[in-house]
Length: 128
Length: 213
Image (cartoon, rainbow over all chains, first blue to last red; front, side):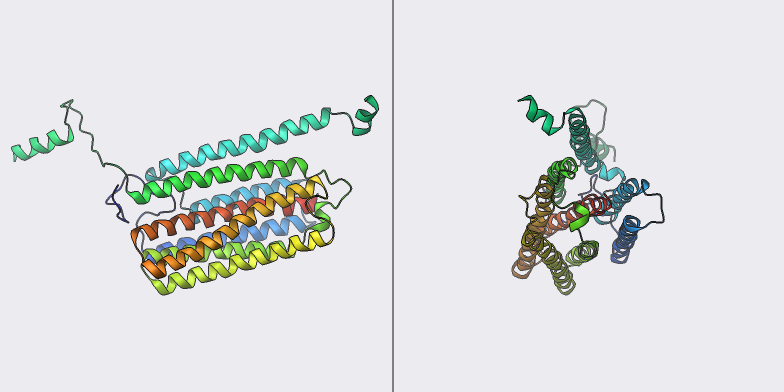
């Protein structure tokens, strides 16, 4: 393993590394990411406290905004993109996301089911 | 001319199978290190997802204690969020400065990142201390247990990140921008940005969804 900082025409890109850009282009990337993230955050906080939209849509909107903002962070701050030199990083991310959705989705699903099928606590007490 | 062509051909195709595979060799240490750290970050996110799942299940189990909407203060959360977002930006500036070997901008970016991280921690600590003082500690209800463990776990990560940040500044001060120091700096930047991603989940799911319910 060589210790050089910049690969000579490499085939892979380290997570967090960008393709060769000038300093100005790199700073611009972070500025765009920051502006997008601030916009999405402001929208989230606005949506959560407003009466302007149909109330049952608020949780869905918040989750969609959160996922969008996570995407912005991944692309502009962590530089996980769809480029061919980024395949390894994206595959690892895809596997991680799969585990996250299995854990969260599975837990919520199963626990809601158990909760719905369990008799109320006072009924359990009387059976004993 | 023909000789050199045959020689290079033999080198690229040592077993003469007629298939020339260009072999770039093992990846550079920077790529291997950052990729390994990326795997760690993903496993850390999987661990956070367990806390999120526990919170989602227990958020309604208040045991006649306070509900989320009664204890969350949106203004504080907004300030915390802006602090973390700006710190992610300044951390990016510091890593660009590190790549450029520019000490002044590196120290400046890292210092601002550190101060923003400390403001975040101070606000969170005050919120926790206030809740405990009002008798709403983690042992009050299952909801508060899940809340304190999820948000507290993120806070512990930020604290560890601040310590790591100070270590990186000291290493650059003592050793300069050596290749190994730059690799650590890269891992630190990944860590700090990943914490911001987890915080997006926390403020959306815990504070905003919780205060609506």
